[in-house]
Image: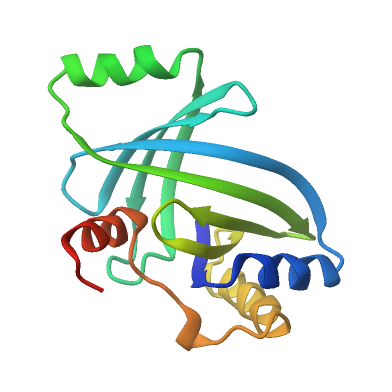
Length: 172
């Protein structure tokens, strides 16, 4: 189970704080995600990591709708981003939204930090732990979040797709 909490952050400030904890830098990713229209709590996307020459097909099911912290996820590498997207189009899937972001990935023990600069939205930090013990994973996430100066007020429970739709419609 992928357990993560997403926080709104200042990108540069969060980067400095993560590095000050001693988290190891893993990689930078320039992501383009195409999400296809499916009824929530199901998510289907094709992701291109432009700077790494990789692409992935991901199916996620949100296990706690509204909070969006617990996901059952299946992900596979695909050899061609554009052809994979075209297959889904020909199968009748409609594109819902495109999310573009720069992501810096860090690790500290079992905790993964995904620091994102999302086009049109700004800075976000996903703190993630992979575990079947959801309560223990959340405890670990909140321990490190507090060390970064983050609180419940900083949590952003909405999906990037929701935030981008709101931004396009002028809502906040």
